[in-house]
Amino acid sequence: MSQSQIKEKPVHPTEPQPRLASQPVEQMRPEWLDTLSRIPGAGLKGDGFPRNVLGVLMYNPETFGPFLDYWVTCKLKMGLSVREQELVILRMACLYRSNYVWMHHVPVGREFGVNDTELDMLRNGSYASFSQREHSLLAFTDELVDSRTINPDTWAQHKAAIKDSDLVDLIGLVSQYVLFALTNNAMQIQVEPALKSISGIEDD
Image 1 (cartoon, rainbow, N blue to C red):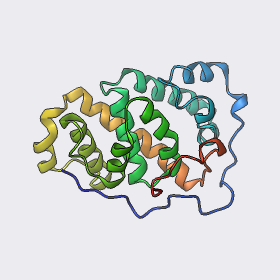
Image 2: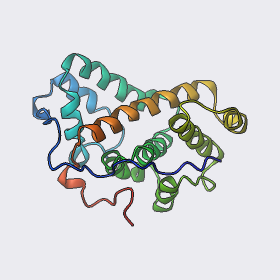
Image 3: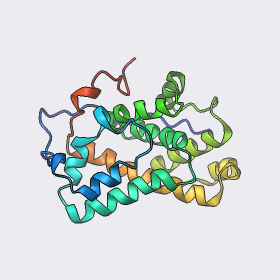
Image 4: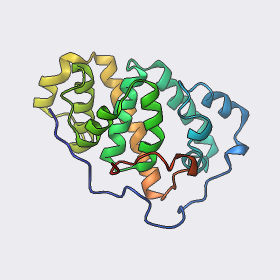
């Protein structure tokens, strides 16, 4: 089992303002809003809508629209269940120390069955209580971030639990949340006020 721990990287923005002002999401094209309406569950809608990071990604509208379609289609069509995706995303938040990703996805994870004990395990990189498949997905996630690959011992231990197409989907999911976490950290994106009551990665 991977014992990967939270990285020594920023959890909270250290600057009082974001480095790039978010574009107003109220100006989103209708087709973008249609795409976003397909996101499963309620957690990333309403108060949970990630307007600050999406407003930064909107700086290039020609790439933003195709990315949105890819991102949302993956959520719906991956071989990984929504719960499995949320476990990976929450672990990615820990590995990149992105409170923005964590605080947005805690409500989504809870909506799809992730409980507080499991949130603590994700913080600590301890997966023994998860199913074998979930354990394997998380072990591979740690390897992909820590080693930029999957090492032979981890591959031998966990590959049987995940079919080939799901492994390709996992790599795609991890890559998506590298983009989100790096954007949030590098651009010092602030968590929206409605989510600040959610415990962060290092909070009790």
